[in-house]
Amino acid sequence: MSRAAAAGPAGKKPLGQRAKQFVVDFGRQWELQSMIWPGVVFMIIFNFLPIYGLVIAFKQYTVMDTFETAPWVGLENFRIILEDKFFWESVVNTLAISLLKLAVGFVIPIILAIMIFEVHYQRFKRIVQTVSYLPHFLSWIVLGGMLINWLSTTGLFNEILLSLGIISQPKNIMLDADKYWWIAVLSDIWKEAGWGTILYLAAMTTIDPTYYEAARIDGANRLKQIWHITLPNIRLIISLNLILTISGLLGSNLDQALVLMNAQNRARAEVINSYVFRMGIAQGDFSYATAVGLGVSVISLMLLVMANKVTSKLNDNQSVL
Image 1 (spheres, helix red, strand yellow):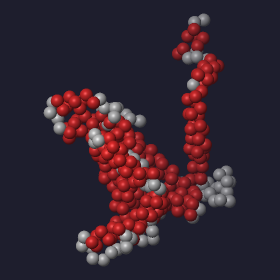
Image 2: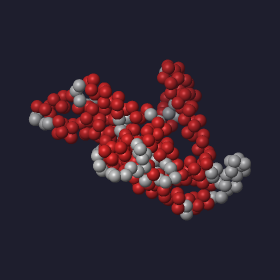
Image 3: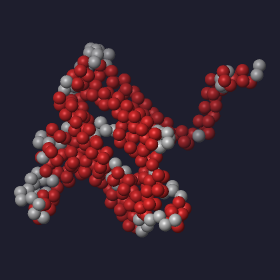
Image 4: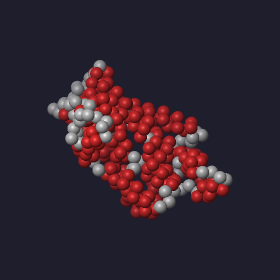
């Protein structure tokens, strides 16, 4: 009998032989495996096992029930969602805030990263990076408290406007629902713009310096070097961040909403995540909240696939996922 026939279809090794080879490879790489497997176990416990809980989206579940004893209601929870005007208000707010973040906040980390990369004075570069990264490490409890204080009637922002003569009477800006979307967008940019430069700066450091030298010899100024060398070489990272941003359009920041939302601006501040939190945790309607979360996850997956298709077309059919 030939070796190929003994190995099985298409020359495939027998299961016992493959298992033995796996054990041998695992033993050779035990240092790397010891770092990988805790993360795998964590994902299984906290990401895959909870998927079974999605079944309550199709049941009328209460704290007195188990997953098995709760009565089935089919798509009733989804019908209620479609008729819930408060849910649709949260959808509008989520999309408005997320699209504004995409339109304004997506390009700012790219511009900031290029500006930092173009600085040749290393000490100043480190100072700028540290200052821009710092807000990311502060929780929304801290930053939200600062914003609420600054935007209050006696806060810093009103004092500046009064001293410049722009306004005659101070007002609490956080109570103005019409301004909340921009407050959420700008405060999120303030917190995350510096941190968002890390991937771009890492990609820029891999660009061959001879490209810039050749461009300078050919007479290209800095703007032309950025346009024709820097941006093309980081386009895959830009595409990856764009895909992740688009797929997360329905996942507006829960921490930010809970901190900045109040009774006066709730009509513009309530996002899907905070609405699910209120319905599921505060009011105990777990089935409704799970149905909303499941629907959002499905739509986010569709957005992810579509964004990947579009960006791959823009990158010569090269997918970044």
